[in-house]
Image (cartoon, rainbow, N blue to C red; front, side, top):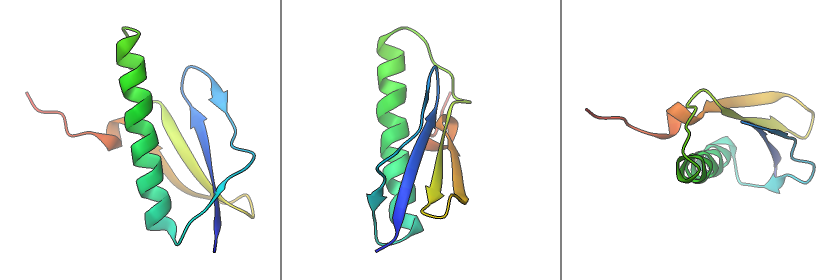
Length: 78
C-alpha cells in the first residue's frame, strides 16, 4: 500500500515524518480534508481563522501530490 505524508502549514509548520499507508490518493485526500476541518475548528476555538493555511500531501519519494488549503475543506454560505 502507498505511503502518504501530511505536512501542515498553519501557524506552525509540522512535517509528517511517519506518514500513513492508504489505498490511494483519494483516501489521502479524505484524510487531509478531515485534518484540515479539525485544525480549523481548533483555530476558531482560539479566536482566529486563516483559510489560506494548507496541508501538503507527499508520497514516499518526496513528490507533492496534493495541496489542500483549509478553504478547500469547507463550503461557506452567506
